[in-house]
Image (tube, rainbow, N blue to C red; front, top):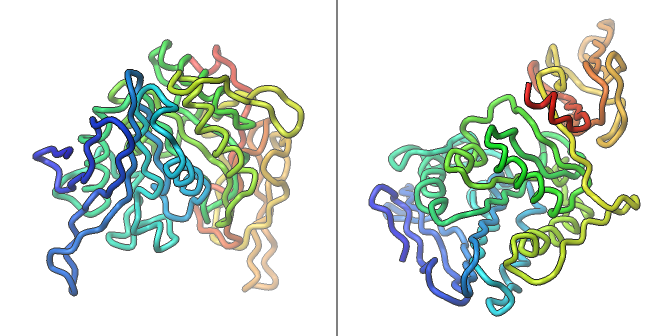
Length: 345
């Protein structure tokens, strides 16, 4: 039994035990019909021999499906005899949001991935974030957190990582991204990254890799295929499993293309609320000054649309998902080829 005095969440399984352990995280949630109610979050741990610990998480946002599917499949099938080390798998971490099919938790209307390192006496999302940070991460050597753009957008299929100052950690993370085998790996500086799971992992000096494997509120067929292959690739790369990673791409490329979103110039934001008509799909080549899309005001027939333009050359990484956007929404994110010299500036 894993317990930490400060956490209100209990873990039913022994993460140090050999073999395959299956159980639930028990998160307290008092509600009108159950004063001592709990929320049960599935967790599977497979351990054998000596080796690193890999944490696979999905469902931090409930409407991002590819990771949930791939991690669940691996959790059902991974044989302890096939590995050397430990694999902790939580396919649906934010289970209230997963079952509600929303980015935010229906319990507290919070984005769990903006709640780290959490608070054991805070809201449900803060309590859950604290458990991950304070209880799980001290066991972990490698964190792979699978995301997509959900209902908020679409994404070119990619891994992503922050630009970390530690050269050794940065190089190991980029090597892990290459082994993961998505078409792109994006090194980025985000709009609001300090309270994410990735940031919590990095603060502990642990290797952290995220993904964007689809979006638009649907299950991306290629995203699931990449995720299924990638989880095994990661285990092979870190020598938990025998074999070499398969990084071949459907377009014939043999490797992942490393990209970056270096600064705010990569983002195009809606200057007003309206109906956004994009001009490109993710993966398209974009040029600075070209039209990213038109913002329409269909409720006002005589009002002309507003042009939204790209601010730099590159490849479209993310595009707006819902047609109707709010002022300040990111409607396009452009990535450039990775340049170590520029990235370090």
